[in-house]
Structures are given as C-alpha cells and as structure tokens.
Length: 169
Image 1 (spheres, rainbow, N blue to C red):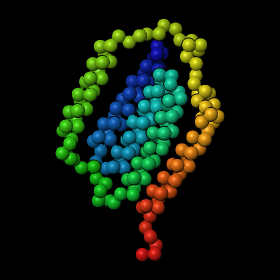
Image 2: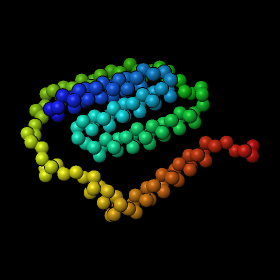
Image 3: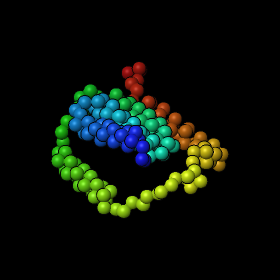
C-alpha cells in the first residue's frame, strides 16, 4: 500500500464507512438509517478492495450491501408506521460507553502490536482462491448449495405468507 492514490482512497473510504456508521446511530428515520448502513457496507467493500481482497469485497457487496439491506428494507416496510421512529431508549448511554471502550481497545491493539511487514509480494505466495471456491461450490458442494437456495426460497415464501392480509375477511 505504497501508492498515494491507494492511501488516499483508503482514508476516504474509512471516513465514508465511519461516517455512515455514525449516521446510522444518529438517524431518527429508520429508512434513512438503512440507507446509511448500505453506505457503510459499500465503504467496507471499498476498503477490502484497497487491501487487495477482491473476493471478500464482492461478497460484501452481494451479501451485505445487497441481500441484507434488502431484507432490512422489507422488514421496515412491513412494520406499522407508528413503530418506525428511531427514538431514544434507556440503553443509549451504556451503548455509547461500551462502543467507546471497544474502539479504544481496538486502537490500542492496532498501535501497540508489532505487525509483520511482507517485503515483496509475488503471485506464487498469494494465489487467488476464487477459482478454487467456485470449483468447490459448483462441484463437490453443489447439492448443499442447491438445498440452501431452496431453503431460503421456502423461508421467503413463508415470510410473505405470514404478513399478507387475507382477502376473505
């Protein structure tokens, strides 16, 4: 990570990620909180890209910024309008204190630990695993992959059936 562009992108994406997370915490509207959470997820994907973890970045976009955020939007849309405010609760102060303690611990560990530095990165030492994962998912674990997709489809249909209103009533 010696290029000035990558370093600038890292710090910009870090600011976007932390800013999105803070906006989720401070937002009073639940829809806006979900949008800020998606922004934070996309910032994390960008951080993974700056760290040359392209498979994890794509998985972050597909799973978190895509599927999880859509699930949250459906959950928000299915709740009654009166339950959508993001009002203060009794646990705000303890949550902020716990978050500050965890952040201080992570910062202390990040600064205090002697991190090993790899001098030269060559392709032989760090092979990509995307093709191996694809071969396993579409080869050896194909049945488990398909069973999981059918199970998720059944859960989606069940959730729709639970929340729909009956026309007969």
